[in-house]
Image (cartoon, rainbow, N blue to C red):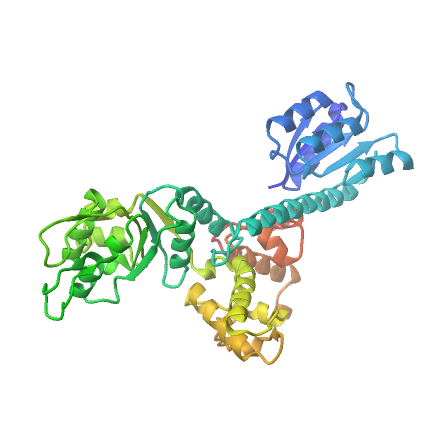
Length: 452
């Protein structure tokens, strides 16, 4: 919900302005002096999405306050209000960085339209700045995305990376857990040491034990020489245990010993070895449920569960698809030696509409195949080879219902598909956040409750 600071010494006018804005779904706060406004912005530079500033204040000129606020918070849109307007004043206000200039008394519609445009401009400026910071920090192979759920996971990973804490990655198959593990390793103090990976579900129990802990010559049939295991090879570095939920009970006990004591016993040996390895584990299983069912050790679960990051499925974060597509196209084109620039608008729309049951892994494979097979520099929708979803439940034709019902139901579906992220939903709908707030209130829309 947009937050607006009203700076005006005419208290009745400021109160009316506040009421008008709050009825439109905004949060508004009023102050009556330049000093109060400057202090409020200095105290919390990110508290407001817009400032409405009267030109004449009892303790300072509104243009001076504008300069002071923008020095503290350069991304804050500001609109100058005055009953003493002139072309020169308007030009000066815009030169100093004001978004617009309103001459009192102004129509309600003019106020609301200006507020909506200013808030949207501020949102875009902040979003672009955040994206620039994100792009500047991204290295080849890093996870990419911009959805709130993804960015929350990435921020937790960024904080956990420099530590030696064991990290447990959860999520459906193909959500990018190995990519996130590599991100954690590259940003750790162990980045100059090896990152080794093993898929615990792909090996038989005896072979996995030998792979992890090594073996002595003659320990079993075919063991013709002594070999180091991954825990020894990765000493000083990181070991990524993928599909940890598929490890047998016997191996779980041995993994617990490594995590607790930092030592292990190679197969066929009697002398324990020590290792300094950071463990990152991943699974698509519900380990808490497996503990309850008795198929996974509770003590091992808590050893792995120091920092837990849950990657959401791709269908729940469609905002991430454009960035992923751009990254995967560049990566595949570089690998296969083709000049492919990206997807056509129709192809990108097809990606956004597709449910991606195989998650990020499926998207990456689809893009790689399309880069190889695309006839030109741009990948069109047919080149993606995506299956067309089957028909959903029949709905009444639009012409059989009033227009307001069609609009209401469409807005509800977009909000539900975007997890009630109003900024993303407004962008999809092609309207401003203020208009969307008004429609939500007008139609009485609520999360999870189909409108009737």
